[in-house]
Length: 361
Image (cartoon, rainbow, N blue to C red; front, side):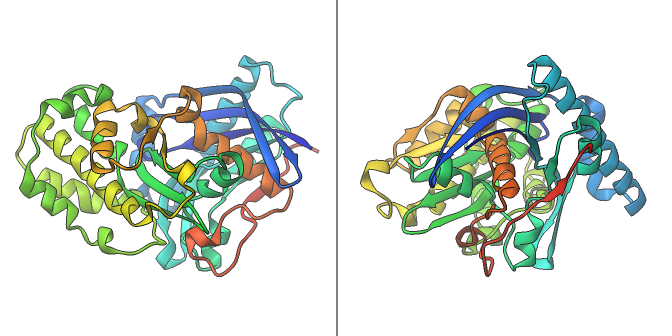
């Protein structure tokens, strides 16, 4: 059976919305995929400001933003379909939305982007709110992508996605995965102090020096001592990371260099316990997300994980893997199959997550 779906992903780094149109074919329990169209739409300054300040809004203004952002995504999808001639080719849309609040220990999560507006604008069934059902069953509601990795990239056992937050998954006797640390969100924030949107290939970081005292303070943060399952909200960066960096008077290159080292060390510590646990033929680390283009960060990760070779897939998969998997999770929801792994999230059972908005009759 073949399905054709659009997936949308917006990360905490606020670089834009990733859209993927893909086909998925099932043969028994095996799945194959093909990316048929993809695009990243950057946020303008207005949307960056609105999204970055969303956590401080009143309930009324937050709900207004939820509706506005849903309309915005609906128009993006419509324009994407027109640009690639996708009329009557798309069966469903799965939109992750933009995470503002993620508090699994308090029993809730919320992503901006009203699915009702997207469905009304496109006339196509839309699936949103992919995390809440898992949290209701006692899980973290994250990461979502390991199930997609298991089904679509079964020839790999170690995965790292470096987006606004860096997360890992390991596929051995069981699949585990968790958020490791804030990544591009912090690196981009520091790079913006030099007038750049991001540190291209990590060149600024590479020119700096590591501040050992600052590095030790970052590595000592309590989250890193917790065992998995665990996940991070954007507030961790705002409340725990940024104050530590702001208290330091080092130059931007030194701050970038130190924070890059912090990411590499935390990823190493996260993955070291699992080395040797997977099939020896799959002992390589598949890296995706915007951070995969940061040559200096990849160099430091490889330095701390010398026995785990880095594998960088084709550029389209590096950039759009998460949006691709959102589309796939939408297909699983449409089939009423589990959309998240309880072995990853710690939930007390597997669940079928996602709200379905039917679109036009």
